Image 1 (cartoon, rainbow, N blue to C red):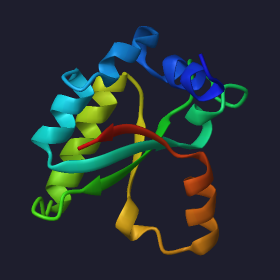
Image 2 (image 1 turned 180 degrees about the horizontal axis):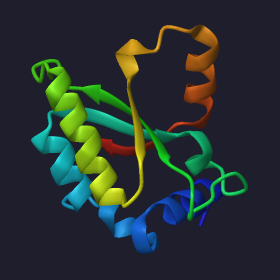
Image 3 (image 1 turned 60 degrees about the vertical axis):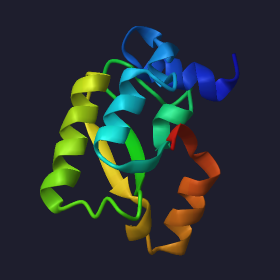
Image 4 (image 1 turned 90 degrees about the vertical axis):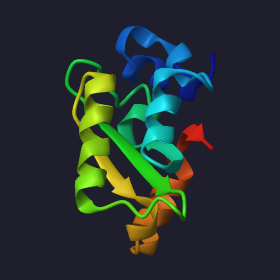
Length: 116
């Protein structure tokens, strides 16, 4: 397993990478919410920084153009992701990241979890 896969397995309940299968629970949730792409970033991409007992998960979402999610939809997605992962989720919209330094940092670490 790669270092990113090790960190990802630590972030998933029971280390179940099968959750990422095209027909797995994460893909089903993303399709239901009109997600085009969902990426992991932050400490969950780095095994030496991720604490499975205390760390949250940082996710970057990119919606399909036709999805047009409301604030309620965004919060519902965050809550469903937190329930799926069994830990708090910090969810950011890719289109909302304006700071170029933050964008570069996220882009350097992002690991795709779902791509439509």
